[in-house]
Length: 323
Ligand code: NCD
Image 1 (cartoon, protein in one colour):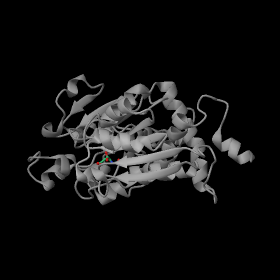
Image 2 (cartoon, rainbow, N blue to C red):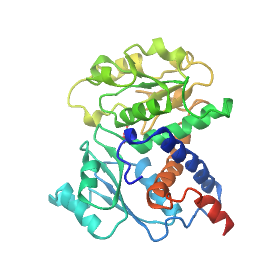
Image 3 (tube, protein in one colour):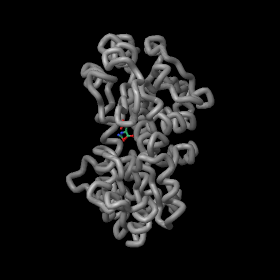
Image 4 (cartoon, rainbow, N blue to C red):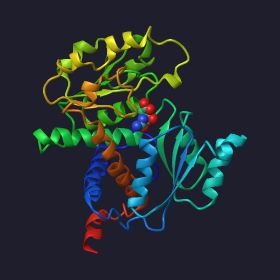
C-alpha cells in the first residue's frame, strides 16, 4: 500500500490484514514499555489544517510507539496563516525528507492532491466532507471485536445491519464507513432528516430513510454522527430540541434497541443533541473502545505503509517480543 486516501481503495483481504495486524498492535497498549522498533529512523509529519483531538494524538502515539520520529504541524502557528498555499506548505514539509505525511484539510481531495506533488506516502486524516478512511477502519476494528464476542469465528460483516445516523451531508466519517462496510459485506442503513440527507444518496451502496424509530429494532450497531455546525451555513433543522426528538439517540430509543446492539460515535460528541448521556455511557457503548482502537489501527496502517509490509512473514510485535 503506497498511500491511504480512500476507503474505496481497500479490498476485503487488505482490510482484514490491517485489522488483524491492529489486533497484534493492540497488545502494546497493555505493556509497561510501549515501544516497538519497527519504524526506527522513519519520519512522519502530521499536517493538520483543521482541529483534532483523537485523530492527531492517536496518529502521534501510533508513530511514537513504533519508534518513528513524529512531528506535528498545525495550520495555526504555521506559515499557512501568512498566506502560504497548500502546495507550497506540502512541498516545504516534504523537502525536509519526511517519509509519510498525515494530512487533515478542510478541502475535499487535498490529501489526493498532495500525493500528486510529493514522493512521500500520504495518509488521509479527514478531507472536508469527503473521507476519513482510518476512522472507518477503527470503527470496523471495534465492531469486529464486539461481534466476535458472540460469534468468535466471524470474518466479514455479512448478515449485520449497521445504521449511520445524523448529519450525513457533512460527514466524511459516513462516506468512508459506507464504502468500507460495503466491502465488508454489511447492510448499511442511512438515517437523516431530509435536509441532511446527501444529494445522490440513491447511488450509495446503502438504503436511506428519515424514520429513525423504524430501523431501531433491526440494527446490530448504530453509529451516531456529530451535528457539524461549523460546516453549516443555514438552518438544516428548526431547533436543537426538534433534532433530538427526531434523530437523537435518546433514553427512549435506547430501550428500543435489541440487546447487544453496539453504540458508536466517532467523537467529539454533542451530548444531549445527537446522543444522550444514557446512550453514550450505556453498557453497549463502544465509544471509548473506538478511541483505543484508533491507536492500534493507525499503528497497523503506518506499519503497512512504512514498515516491512513486503515481507508478510514479519510481525513487528512478535519480532520485538523475541528481542
Ligand atoms: C470526525 C472528523 O473530524 O471527521 N472526528 C474524528 O475524527 N474523530 C467527526 C467529527 O468531527 O464529527
